[in-house]
Amino acid sequence: MERIKIAIAQTEIMILVQISRIMEKNKAPLDKSKSITYGGTTGGYTNKLEKDATIKYQKVDNNGIKVTNKSNKNIPCVRIFYKYKSSEGYYIGGITYTAKINNLKAKESQTIYPSHFDSDGGEIMMIKTYTTSQ
Image (cartoon, rainbow, N blue to C red; front, side):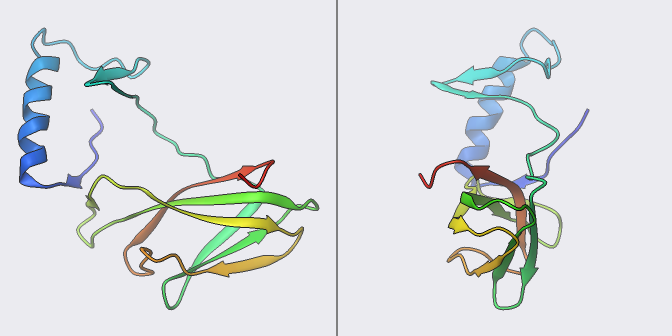
């Protein structure tokens, strides 16, 4: 069984305990090929998040992320998804932040400084490219 460490508010823990009791009532383990719906929200399992092969990234000083387009084509939109990870290995809170770069030119780099990113604890979870700037 795989586990993800996560620290959340005490009130949310109580809700999750109630959910897990409902889910475990039949004693069946979670089928990773299926999704779970509770309260109108559907979640699923993944063990790998997308990190586009045409993009190189690195954390830089002063809470920045340097993003490089390795391809020969301009990319209309790049989104960087990140979370805060404590020194103990816990993902703090439920929010995944996003930062956006518009029109990243071929073979060029751009450094961004997202307002919630911390070079020491920021963990880049996923990077996606889009064919429009939306």
